[in-house]
Amino acid sequence: MTFLPSSDRKHRRSPRAPLLPQKHAAAEPAEGGFDGASFSGAVFNLSTTIVGAGIMALPATLKQLGLIPGLAMIVLGAVLTNTSIDMILKFSRASKSPTYSAAAADAFGGAGRALLQSCIVVNNLGMLVVYMIIIGDVLSGTWSNWVHHTGVMEEWLGQHWWTSRAFLLLSTTLFVFAPLISFKRVDSLRYTSALSVGLAVVFVAITAGIAIIKLANGSITMPRLMPKLVDQTSFWKLFTTFPILVTAYICHHNVHPIENELKDPMQMKSIVRSSLTLCSAVYIATSFFGFLLFGDQTLDDVLANFDGDLGIPYSMILNDIVRISYGIHLMLVFPIVFFSLRLNLDGLLFPYAKIPIAFNNRRFYSVTAALMGFIFLGANFVPSIWDAFQFTGATAATSVGFIFPSAIALRDTHGVATKKDKVLSWIMILLAVSSSIVALSSDVYGFFNSDEGVGS
View: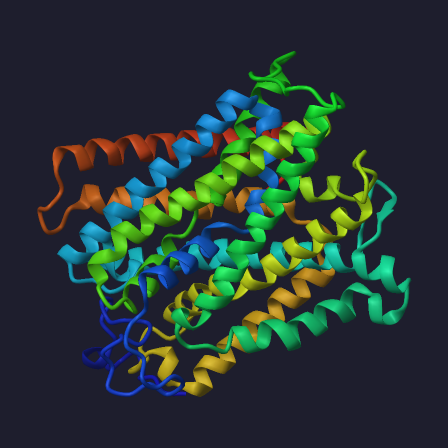
């Protein structure tokens, strides 16, 4: 492992030094001949970063907010995310910072960089444990209120040791995750990212098809347009949807790794807008048709609704297709989120390293193995962490997505911020902080009153 003692300050890696290899690096240890990432590959990688487990909780947000406010909040989330990413790119270029954490260091020093990296690590680690838990639920089933919901492998092969949760997750880790997380360039995942986005579209298409058929034959009706407020508790529960909407669009941690590999880095703004447009369309369709199909019976994780008779022919086959496609989708999202998790954890643990982690195999594989071990244990021994996921959405995700970009713009160390930038920054900080406080307070209130909020 190559790093210098803390006493040798003059050789310390600059906060602006890249955590990953640039496309113009003299040598590439794993993938020679790399000539820069394409526009389409970058769009798919960023879209895959965005569309994760949060998509399955969006129909439940519409159940809480009603159709019109819910869809409006999804669009507003995309607009605010685009604004915050534009700020990151603008101030990164002004400070010549190749990473998000370097831009934070330019504005707030080493402490700011460490705090941002800590938020990214907490957010990504929480998401990946949730992804693996859901994959385990899809493959081997889960227990809820003393009722066992069977997984697809249990349905096909019965209950055996080779269909147990631990064995299936171990097999997934060794034969799916291990190869995918071994790539040292995010662009290497462009094809799996394209497949992942395609599987999300498959889920939307099946859900939309079922909903349209049932709407046509009159077995379902149009859902509520506005929230249903019956008491003070139902009002405060509206705010528990905020962490879900925030988490649904978090991709800021992968913007710089993708930009650094582009043939033309100036395309990044167009890539961000294209990705957000694509993901917003998927989110709106998923939310609308999921809520239309299940109405007030929509569960916190809408995937759990696909375990019984849907009231149309071939229901069980469609259920299996939906669950399998979503399980594979999460398997392909996993390495994209893991990529930035590894980079930021490396920056926290080895701030004095002389070379990027991608060029140090011992450090690369040590950090990778440690992270995968922690995620695997978390997914096997934590039965459900929806509440923890909601907590990270209201804290770490909010900080990464809105508070840090706004704070960097307000700090404005290079004098490039406009009046519009500063106004928007204050608006985002006020919205993020106030909504997070209310959401956390609502979670605590709901917990002590045994009310079930919306999961993420």
